[in-house]
Length: 67
Image (cartoon, rainbow, N blue to C red; front, side, top):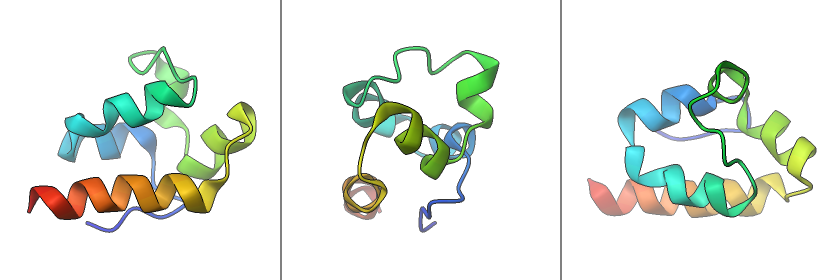
């Protein structure tokens, strides 16, 4: 699975729960709440003032490392 800016955070956490610390590191401390579960990566980055491409690089590298 390749994560894009349109991927839903909840979907990422279902297939790669080890990505949770990356999202928590940008300020998403409520990963279990319905709002964050339904947010896209791009939406989360906008809310938390994070560069979407940098976050995608981190998450995709992590998921690629797990294969």
